[in-house]
Length: 78
Image 1 (tube, rainbow, N blue to C red):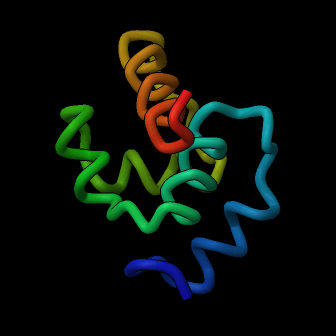
Image 2 (cartoon, helix red, strand yellow):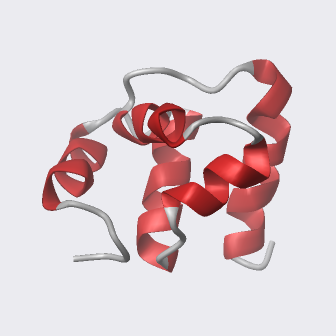
């Protein structure tokens, strides 16, 4: 199991549409063991919002999309 992530969350993330930005963020965070609380604090949203993105329930709003893309790129050194 990854850093504080439940098996259920990991499974929901795996099943979710990988083209969604929030799902891609979730996969990167799970792989890199970045806590949800860290992402939530960085983006100024709740942990529940981040969980919903990770599972593909909701998509991030445009005002945070670029910052999310930047976070994902930073995880992979791009």
